[in-house]
Image 1 (cartoon, rainbow, N blue to C red):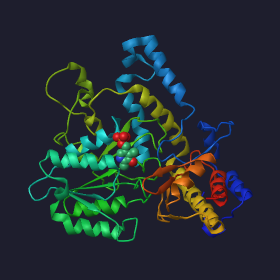
Image 2 (cartoon, protein in one colour):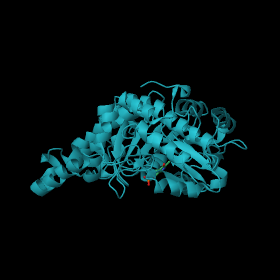
Image 3 (cartoon, rainbow, N blue to C red):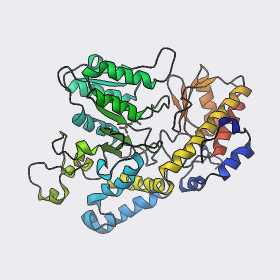
Image 4 (tube, helix red, strand yellow):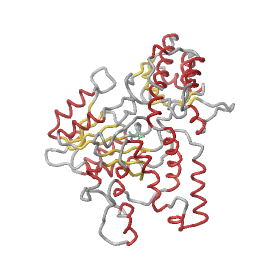
Amino acid sequence: MGKFAAMLFENTLAFAQSLDNSDNLAHLRSEFIIPTNKDGEPIVYLCGNSLGLQPKNALQYIQNELEDWALLGVEGHFHGRKPWFHYHKFLTDQSAALVGALPHEVVVMNQLTVNLHLLMVSFYRPQAGKYKILMEAGAFPSDMYAVQSQVEMHGYNYDDAVIELAPRQGEYCLSNEDIIAAIEQHGSELALVFFSGVQYYTGQCFDIPAITKAAHQVGAMAGFDLAHAAGNLKLQLHNHNVDFAAWCSYKYLNSGPGNVSGIFIHEKHGLNPATPRFAGWWGHKEDVRFQMKRGYIPEPGAAGWQLSNAPVFGMAVHRASLDIFSQAGIDALTSKTQTLTPFLRYCLLQAKAQNPRIQFDIITPENAAGCQLSLLTDASGKQLFDYLTSQNIICDWREPNVIRMAPVPLYNSFVDCYKVGQAFAEFKG
Ligand SMILES: *Cc1c(COP(=O)(O)O)cnc(C)c1O
């Protein structure tokens, strides 16, 4: 699907159905378990930005590991169908393809915030006079707390060492020019520029190559939290020369609550054994790992940042999900997003024009490439949100007054978007 001009949309069920009929990814919806309401009807699920739906194949993938464990016990490490000894490797190629990396630049391990800490241990290396971190104001709280504790570990305080960049007065999103100008302005003091790929509150997509380039020009590292970007945007971390990144697997990557995270470390750092890091046995050079000797020798690449042996059950679900992504291809998915999300925007704005009781502004920039739309509401926003829930439309509420919705190309339909518009049009307040 290509990009549709919004003026070509029609606000009718027949039109939404015609888009679904010409969607060559529509069959993927049947790979997922769509939750139902109490009457057994599928709900409209628009929360894939927060917790993606369960792939139907996940159960089988976990069952295989439970069976191997039951049959083989410890032997499963080497003689299972997918030996646990290097289970993380079964995730590597697909993860690399998703984020535009070389296979040795990614590994799946731990969870997201843990990984952000491990990456900052390696790539936030403040020196006298060059110790500051530039990040977006209003970043996801875990990122703020992680950054705060990192700067404090090095003996700095947050207010001095962290520069939070806020949108201009009266605006909700940062302009790329302002980000680049701030990097240039503070350049001599910056050790690290750390941004999200997609801002969790507004849905804004940051310009990863431009931010990375500007950071490098002032001698700073560029790192990204891709929690809302992985599986949502087409990423090119290697070509864009990003230093490091991490993401979780349970949002757009549909791998279940709290599941494992992926990291990217550019090969220019990852292949250098002298890059400082926290170490554990699973990052030790694989062919000599079981000699159990002192003296850490890292695996080359991101694999050399692993600490613990692979959590196989979580990774099994992640494999199940990545297999669906491979089947679809990130190019086809992002291409569908370029029509699906604008169609939801169109349906919402049509409803707003029809129904004077509805008050909201979409603060997600129109040119944002991702799935998400963020609706800034007025005082009746929570009421609107509760109404949507009562209409079997599941989106999420972010204090103080934003409703987030994300139609995801793997399992949401154009009819889903149409239904949301209809519900808005019928809102009585
Ligand atoms: C979802 C999210 C997290 C969550 O971190 P966990 O360690 O997986 O709990 C962190 N950062 C951002 C930007 C997020 O969107």
